[in-house]
Image (cartoon, rainbow, N blue to C red; front, side, top):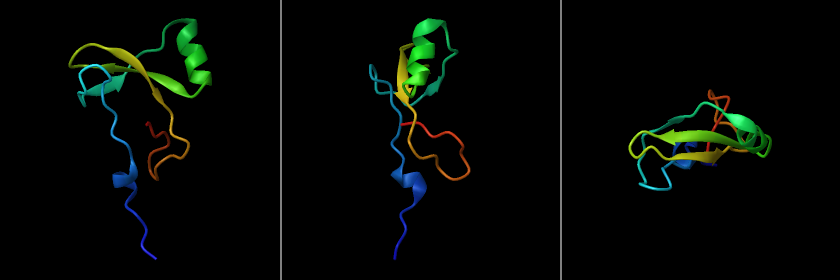
Length: 70
């Protein structure tokens, strides 16, 4: 049985505005971020265009990485 490479199975996170790959965590601020966290979404920030958005927390974490993002 062949097991797929876990790294290739991950979805690459891109900015919804500019489709850039330079995405960094954004500091939580306010009640909306707290609610979104409870629903499995965390704030992210694009360094290319400055867009702030929410990324989904993956249901399964990649080995060696306690938190995986979709």
